Image (cartoon, rainbow, N blue to C red; front, side, top):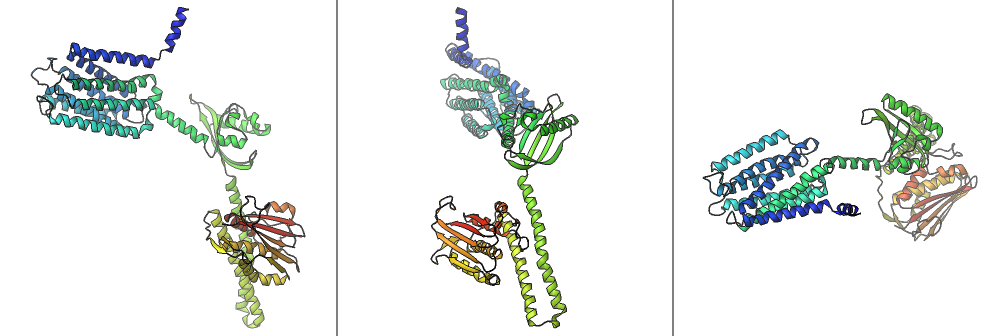
Length: 617
């Protein structure tokens, strides 16, 4: 029972807290050692930092092949040579009696040389966070710099740092080192995404502790005074934090440190797959789903978790599943990729996809799965069909007026002397009508292109609907008279709206022209405006005006009504009447551009009513 209690207690002890406790006790005894011997305290503090520097070198050096930048490599290589200079500094310290014939300037100069090397290395490492330097270049460079510094110091060519106290060079150098470390800190913080959060915090405080240590060393008067003591204490803390950030985490959590970029790339890849606009799936040789992204799952009518682990036979109809199972297995075994277009009846509707399939190898380099990327090209296919229909329709519509124009001009040129003035006027009138038709067709096509490319811009002005309709009726009066059509207009002359008068004119002209074209002889057309309309034709309950255009013509077959606003669509009972099938589609787009709505109510052989609601802008 006692043993079980002891095991339970030991499990509750946090290793981190225990390590901090051990470090604190060790630091306390190091400080206390100063009471016995300052030389002992100094030696312990320096040996501690030297050992850690050696450890940092081994971690940085051995992790170089796994890193995508040279940050840790620079810290590692520089730590080795900083440790070497610190070792010489420790051996030359006053009282060690190893390097005889030298003043306290020797250890002080070695100290400032090591700190310069440390600060510059930190800055260099931070600048190389996203770059790579060859290890051999670093080794050679640091070896040369270290030998040069040590030789300059021992031959007394290095600036003096201590003459019965700190020299101005030593004091200014400490502040320069602090400034370099501050710049380094800012650069690392700016590139914080490159670091594990825990490593970033530890390195941050390590650099701060180093800066405090350097600041303390600017105040000491004697190599054994309190400022020197504080400087070494913060140096111990700085190297301990460096140990925590580099060695311990680098050894205990190598994937968090050395492979952070790999983990981030993996996360980015998952996000790309998850939010891709294409449907992405991966199946194994047995037809089981290994991966289904959100787009593919939505198209299949579910969520990714509804498909992963299931087979093709659980998801698709048996015949389709068998077809894909056999073709997928053949593709995986052959190692060939393929791409093709296919149309499916999906839960989300009938859609066309461009599918690219690629066999993938597993960790043993064996082909074992198939990656499929399906891009929805439904709208593109519709656009291609519309373009093809446009070319076909335009070609057909152009043929008649062009033929008439060519024949009329040819007749005029060859038989001008054989006809009278009335015939000439009729021919010229026919030419003008066909030129007008060609111009109208060209304008319709250009307008559709602007609408499709979102280049349609409205010039909003105040306009009178009655004036616009009266102008349209004046222009269309000859056509109306041919069929003896009467117009009844019920629009208040005080009604004014805001919109693009040119586009409103197009909307009304298309609807009225259609009404005349498909009306019976000796009938009438009614145009009415209802102000402040609220009802079923105003779904958003906006303040506005409802326009009704009613004719008593041939009407529209019931099965054609859902398609009446589609481009190039023409009702089945108007084939003998010229038209492009673009007018109502254009009118609908222009009405919606004014935030309006359009409806149609029609009964075969009784007439049609177009209902247009225009909100007050």
